[in-house]
Structures are given as C-alpha cells and as structure tokens.
Image 1: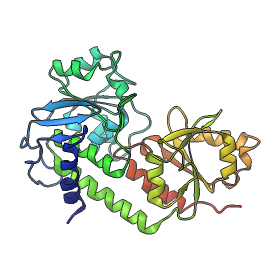
Image 2: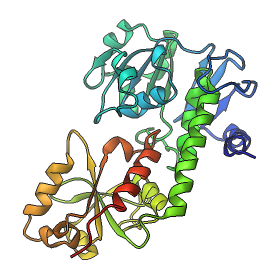
Image 3: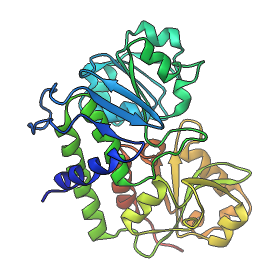
Image 4: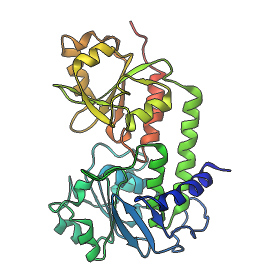
Length: 334
C-alpha cells in the first residue's frame, strides 16, 4: 500500500468527525500528476478554524495572502488560477519563482477589502487569521455573501480558536484540502510521496545524531526560540538532532539568554527573515561579551534556513533537507 493511499483512507474518515473536515471529494478519480482539474466530487466543503466554505466548482481567480498559502498554490502548479497574491516573509524558492512572477502582487502586506475585490476573486486562501480582519480582506462570512469562497490554514486560526497540531501529516492534510478545492487531488498525492521519500532518507542518514541544537528565530532582550511543538521541532526530529528547548510548550517561545548559555549548544539554527536576518543574529551573537563564548559561536557552527521553511507548510520538508545537509558540512567544535 502506498503512503498516499494509506493517508487518504486514514485521514478523511477521521476528519469527518472533527471541526477540520473535507467533504465531497471522495469521487475524485485518479489522474496523471499535474493533470487538468476535475469537477467530479463538487461541491466541496473546505473547513478550518470553525468556518466552512462550500466550493461548487474549481476556482479560477484565487487570491493568496501570506507566503505559506501562496507556496501551497505554487507547489500544486496552480499559478494559472491565481488572480493575485500578497505578503511574503522572505524569498520564493527559485523553483517556483517564474510561476510566482506571473501572478499580480496586490499589496506588500495585506490588501484592504477594496483592493481585494478589485481583483475579482472567486476564492481567498490565507495562512493567518489576521488576513481576514475587517481592515484587511474582510471576514470570511462577508466574503461568502459576495459569492467568494475562502480557506484559512489549519495552523493559523488565531486567538481562542484551536489550530491543528503541527505534524507532517497535518501539513499534508492542508495541501490535500486545497488540492481537492481546485480539483487536482493527484497533485497533493505526488507532493506527499516526494516529501515522505525525503523524510525517509533523513531518518536513515540521521545527520543530526548526537547534536544539541538551539533554534534562534529572533529577539535580543530574550531569545525567541524554536520550542517543542512546531516546525523547528519537526525538522530537528527529522534529522535526528536534539532541540535544547524541546521541553518548552508551543511552536516558539521566549527563553532567557541565561538558559541559552547554560545549554551551550553544539549548533545554532538561524531563521532568515526580512524582519530578523541571519546575518543580524550572527553579528549580535559574536558581539555579545557572553554569547560570543558559546562553543557554537566560537566555531561558527551555524545553520541558516529561510523563515518560510521553518513554519508548517509545503516547504517544511525542504527545510529538513536543508538543515540535514548543512549539519553534515559543519566545521568541528574547537
């Protein structure tokens, strides 16, 4: 039995009993990878974060907000059905850059409702609940009244609404939902097979075996660190490394620099984002009179990863592959 067939029989019945469900796609036929959209199985009910949008036909003019949502669409080869996009955290990977360049950028950050509606969307997909604030795209139920479907990431529900637990399975669940909305379920299957193969290779190689790692996202007064329940932890588990803050709840958490010094990690992973670059963090570490004495800092044992490869989404497996390759090529500790 293939990984894909296992997940489709295992997860879809379970989702029917949960708030995060996907209905109406069981009749989608098998097709060649990157094949045309199918209208079989519509309408589709795409649900997340307590909101359900009924999609009666594959969207033709989607708008994405936030990099995670945009890259799911690009990975599913759906750029030809995007009427606009907005809000990047860092660079789009080169493999998707040509497709991304063909999509109109509506705003550097979130477009307002007027700008969004001017793009004449039939579907809006966002990574974070803030995209649907009144000052931005507008509430999902208001978009529904205008005949516009919408979907919010399983991981971005916002305050007082439970998001999905972060795992590679739940990442693939979201990709499957989007693929089903657009009538291309076989493309999600192909992505999952590819990524599972990458993870299987990392599990066999264990490039991080025996290494204690501090995942430094951002911060100066305190360290905003990768904790035990998010993308950083999944990546470190995939490469066989130990997260020095893996016992801290949540995906990310503020930790004191005293705790970082006490952990004295073998390696520091640096998230590279527009608001906190890897170079800025390295400069801070190497200038600080205490932090510069960490073994990893003295030996320059840094691993750099784009922020967008550290968050739950289609690039999380790429992040694991990148971290694994860099760990295998680090200089020795002094």
